[in-house]
Image (cartoon, rainbow, N blue to C red; front, side, top):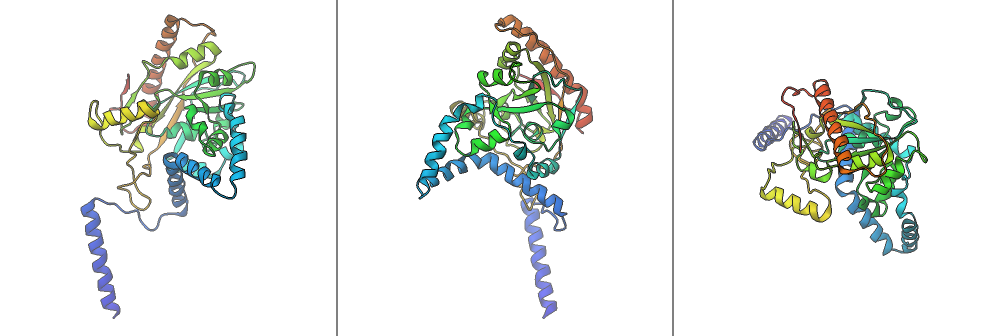
Length: 359
C-alpha cells in the first residue's frame, strides 16, 4: 500500500515537473529562510498598494458612507476638505510611519541602497532631481519616503519629501498614508514652500523629473530619461535659490519586464492616450509570483542603488529668463551625465553596455 502511494506521488511529481517545464515556470524552493519570506510578503503588499491602493481606499470610503457609520465618513470628509491644502504646505510627515518594519523588509528584498557622494549642508535646502522613473520609482520611494535606507544617518539634519501629482491627495484615506510618508504635491506653490529658506532649513524636495511619460520607456538594462523638455524644476530651483542635486537609481529598470512598446506601436499609442487623459501611464509590471519566479506582478529581486550626486549651486533669481533657465539646465544635464558615467561601473554588472539616453 505504501509502495503504491509512493509510486503515485512520484508520478504526480514528475507530471507536475513536466507541465511546469512546458509552461516555463520555475518554482521557488520550499526551504526558503523566514527572513526572505517576509521580504517577499513586504514586496507583495507594496506592489498591490501601488496598483490598487487608491481604488481600495475609495471603495472603503464609499462603504463607510453607506453604512451605519456614515457620520464618521461625513466628519472625515469635512476634515479632509479643511485639510486639502496641506500637500502644498509642507505636508504632514510621520517618523513612526516612515520607520515601519514593512519598509525595512521591502528594502532588503531587492535590496535598495542609498549612497551619498558628498555631504550636504543641513542649513541649506535642496532640489533632488531623480532619474529614472522606472515602472514605479522604487529607488526614490525606498530612499526618500522611508527610513529603511538610513537617509537621516547619511544626511544628518536633512528632511526629504518625495514629490508627486496633487491628484493623489484627493483620494480619501490613501492621502493620509502618502502624507505620513512625507510626500507632497508637485505644484510650484508646494515646491517653493518646501524650499523657502525663511520657513525651513535642510529640506530636500525629491522630484522624479521624467514622470509618467518616462515610465513607458522602462525596460531592463535601458536608461532612457526625459530631461530636455523638463525645465520647470530648474525654474523652481532658481526662484528658491535651492541647490540642484542629480540623483540616479541604478537598477531601477531591472525589477520588471514590461512588454515591448516601441514608438507608434498599438500598445504605445494606447498608453500615451491614457496618460494624456489621466496623467498616469498604464504599465504592465511583469515580474514574478509569490511562489514561482516566472509570472506575476511581484517585482524581481534585483539590486537598486540610489546615488545622490554633488549639489549644483543655483543663484536665486525670482524672475529667470528663458536663456538663464536654459543655461542652468544645460549645466545640470552635463552633471547628470557625468554622475551616470562615473557611478555605473560600481552598481551595474552590465555597465559596459549601459548608456544614458537623454530625450
